[in-house]
Length: 371
Ligand SMILES: C=C1C[C@]23C[C@H]1CC[C@H]2[C@@]12CCC[C@@](C)(C(=O)O1)[C@H]2[C@@H]3C(=O)O
Ligand SMILES: O=C(O)CCC(=O)C(=O)O
Ligand SMILES: [Fe+2]
View 1 (tube, rainbow, N blue to C red):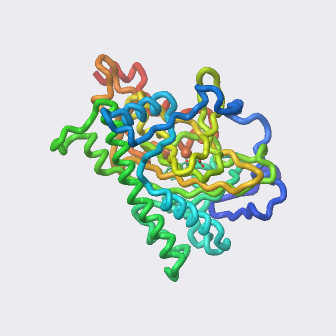
View 2: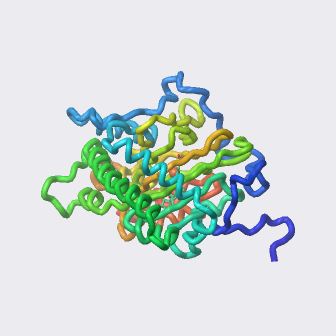
View 3: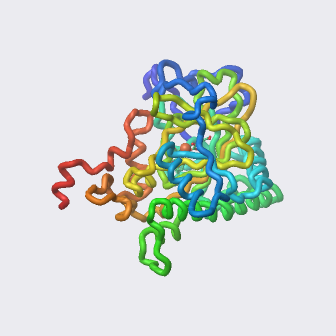
C-alpha cells in the first residue's frame, strides 16, 4: 500500500494531457535546487560560448574530419551543416512527427510502451521514470529497422496517414544512416584509424558495417511555467553518437565545464543537425572524444519538436577501447560492454550525480592483475 505521502504511481503508459494544464502540477514541478543547477550562458557574444559548426563540404585534405574530431574532443557536440540531407525532407519529417503527437489519446495509447517490451513505443522512456518528477514532454521511440510494423499499432488500418508517415520516416532513416556511416568514417580518419581497404576482419570496419539506429521523437509542449518544468533532464546519450534535428525553436543545452560550469544553448539553425557524442564512443576512443551532458528546456510560447537519431553498435557487440586509440604506453581505461549491458548499468545512475562511465572504468589494481 502506498503511504499517503508517496507520489502517485506513474508508469510509462500513463497519459498526461499537457494541453489541458493551466499550471505545472506537483508531478511535473522540479522544485528546490537541481542537480547541474549551473547558470545559462547569456549569449553567443563570448567566443567560448559559440557551439562549433562543422561543414561537411570542407573536404579538401580532411578538413571537415579534423574539425569534427576537434569539436568531439573539446565539446562532445557540434552543429553539422553541408550534410546533404534535403531541407524539404527534414521539414516533412518534423511535420509528420507533429501530426503523430496531435492524434487523439486512444490512438497513441494503442502504441504505448509495454513493460518489459524493450524500449519502443509511445510514452516516457523507462529510464526517465527513475527521476522523482516527470518531464514536460511526450516521446516515441522505435527501431529504425521496424518503422512499418511499429506504426501499425497507431494506424491499424494502414490508411493514407500511415503511408505518408512511414514514407517520411523511411526516407529519413535511409539518409541518416548513410550520413552516420559517413561521419563515423570521418571520425576514424581523423583519429588515424581508417580501416585498411580490403581488410574485412578489422574492428573499425565491423563497427561501420553494423551501425544500428534507434529513432526517437520528442514533443515539448509549450509550458505555463517554464522555470518549474524540465523538458528532458541532464543526461549523456549512451550510444556512439546522436544526430538531433531540432525545430527552429531552441531548447537544447550543452554543459560546458571550462572556464566555468554553465549551460550553452544550441541555436536553432535551419537545416543544421546537432551531433552529440555518446558514452560508447567515449569508450571506443578511450576518452579522447567525450560524451557531453545535455538537457532540453521548455518555453511558454511555442511547442518544440526534436528528433534524435541514435546510432550505436548492434545489441550483441562488445564495445571496448579500440587498440589503435589506446596511446602508446597507456592502458585501456574502460572494460568491454554491450549497449544493452551499459544501459542497464546506467539506469541505476539516473537522477544521481554519478557518471555511468565510472562503473566500467578499469581501476589501477585491476590493471596490474590483467597483465
Ligand atoms: C537507443 C536508446 C537511446 C536511449 C535509450 C534507448 C531508447 C531511448 C533513448 C533515450 C531517449 C531520451 C534520453 C535517453 C537518455 C533515455 O533515457 O532514453 C535516451 C537513451 C540513451 O541515449 O541512452
Ligand atoms: O530535445 C532535444 O534537443 C534533445 C533530445 C535528447 O537529448 C534525447 O532525446 O536524448
Ligand atoms: Fe540526449
